[in-house]
Amino acid sequence: MVRTLITGMSAAGKSSTIHQLVSLGHHAVDLDTEEWSEFVPDDSEHADPGMDSPLDWRWRENRVRALLTTAGDSLYVAGTSTNQASLYLLLHHVVLLTVPTHIAMARLATRTTNDYGKAPGELHRESHLRTIVEPKLRVGACLVIDTSAASVADVATLITEHASGMCGA
Image 1 (spheres, rainbow, N blue to C red):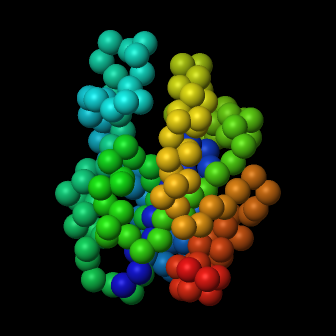
Image 2: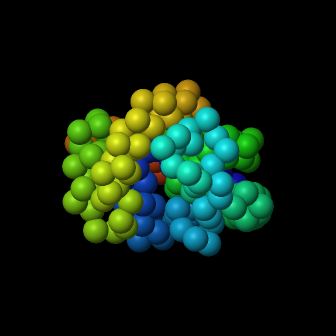
């Protein structure tokens, strides 16, 4: 039973990769949905000081913990949350998807899958968080993939090979 988290900052390709894994028949779950995440008051060090009541999109920890402890051969989950480290002991692999900031900002401005990143304040905050959060994600990752020049199919293949031990996992 191998559990793999695909994490990264916004527009790194997490959702696209998890959808590719699903299309290939893998048990894969996007944690960046209301089923698995919710807005809560942001009491983290990353709270936006410019907001009166900052909110943070966090995993519903009990639900995600239950998902990660269910039986099965392999599971891929994707998302990023300020509470993800509390679940690392349930994971076998943490894969960081990354992309240069200018590419992430362009992807956010043009993506059609959700509205995050469309507002100027969100772009500014995302740019700021990339300098703080991504280095922390990098420390916890056992594989880092730059998605700026890789196809979604290639990224999915790299992750599945890593999770199966085919690339030195």
